[in-house]
Length: 492
Ligand code: NDP
Image (tube, rainbow, N blue to C red; front, side):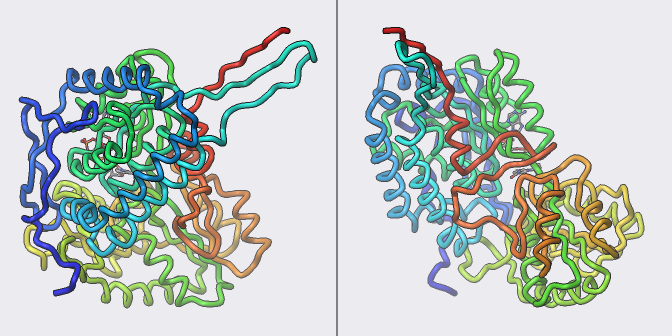
């Protein structure tokens, strides 16, 4: 028992959609929502139809036109957003339980990271409300050229299940800071915490209709949102395949900007000169086991110099023994479940395929049977994975690391370059010149040197190259992506 333990049955669920500043219960079919920790159904959400999506988009368009959200002094908008962030912090004990109960986030992590990171991200974006107003253009002196930044109107957002609050806040907060209204669809597997987030936004003073949540399935509600003609801009986080479908659907109601934060198959390149192999092993290990590998930037391919590969693998095998898998409502859990049984089966299928093709599982390679009914997968390190094997080429989204070795820098960088993904990469070396050559050469949206993973430096944008996406979440770039520019030329 720890002080953080809680009873999953005791968590109050905010049910229904959230439209026009209130929870909305509909007569739509109910989708059962399961807890990944034990596969039990713990709640239901309405299976949002195209009509419900239309109702939410109409409410958002009305609020955008009639409330003063977009037209008020931007610092007043910032003040509301900061108040919202404070309410998120104040609600942390309840919000973290709501996040933990049905997602893959252990309560300890939800409290220490997800909730405070969400609040701080909102504060970061709030500060941009009055800082991206536009420009005065150079023109003749008897006229004035203006480049005016304006919101799009209604932003349609589709959020994933791996970090439900944090990922969604990276969509919602920059859109609101820029003066837009938002309709967001969470994953049907992690639907509840966003409704609570919306209630807190209303309490903070976000006008009714400016922030709406529609529940439902991706292929119906998500699709209807992406293709709704009332949406001015679409933003999505999830798989590359679905991202392409969203982009296609969005284009059908007319051209519009689309931000896509998609999958990855990110390499961690370790050169032989690293001074502290123990520290590198811990970093590499954390980068594929955090949230059980269900992280878009998971470092799932170790590319290690021949001289250090064995030692790194041995140390990681030791580290795996210290992980404590368990239900997300147990305060001592340090290793997450997989989001669902089908997803755990998918991970297993990819691992089995690699083993059949001759790979060796140094550790793991199985569903974790010790926890009854939960969707857990053992931390898995695969060596000798044949080129062309799916586990080496495709995003696994589970705690699975493939290991490849190299002789020289050229070979390392060639292995690191994935033919279709380019979300992130890690480089570990004591040689600054080599590190900088790698930074330049690697075709990835983020390159980490002698570390791996994001920090609380929200000013550093995140987003992919190639099939890993278009545009950025976080950073000034994320706010700019929620603004369009009007040119005005005034003769006087
Ligand atoms: P998806 O990409 O299918 O789902 C992400 C979001 O998109 C969810 O809200 C989903 O809703 C919604 N969605 C699904 N289909 C459509 C559609 N046709 N139109 C609009 N929205 C849609 O991911 P999965 O949940 O199926 O996971 C599969 C794989 O995706 C993972 O194994 C992983 O590789 C990758 N992934 C990557 C993430 C990242 O952070 N980059 C996050 C999540 C997944 P719903 O869940 O209700 O169907």
